[in-house]
Length: 190
Image 1: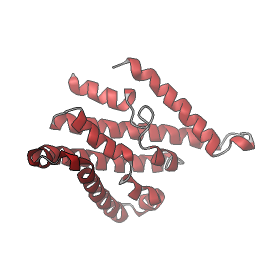
Image 2: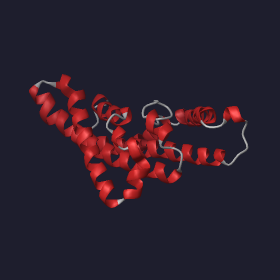
Image 3: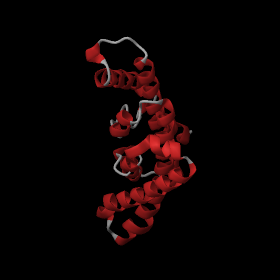
């Protein structure tokens, strides 16, 4: 039951983008097409899962025993940067079209505060290894869900006849706010 609560809370109640407001840069930047959003979500899921696993192992097997917990942020950033480089190399080989579509936002996963935030949150919440991996994957699914929903809304809005002053960024920000408010309705669940 505890894992189920972690999953529901991470995806809906404490959605990393819509409730905690982390990872806004890719949320706004890559959400023009649903297909690109799915690709970014998959890349973030992969990086976040591996980063949380590595962060947990490093925290409790290296940083804590050596008494250098204050190095946590730097170590986690180095781990995340290495993983993003690996994902970038793999995507360039496996899916050049997705690699091109993600463009500059792929290397920005390194500085995506959502990935670093999850690595730090799992230590703060004192999750065990299994809970850490479940939490990070569920958070990444929540990130992907927010990205895909927002991309779908933006694709639909592109086909609508909007006033000139509302086209582009203004309607995107209003839509993001409404989507965030809709997700806040889940806060009574957990």
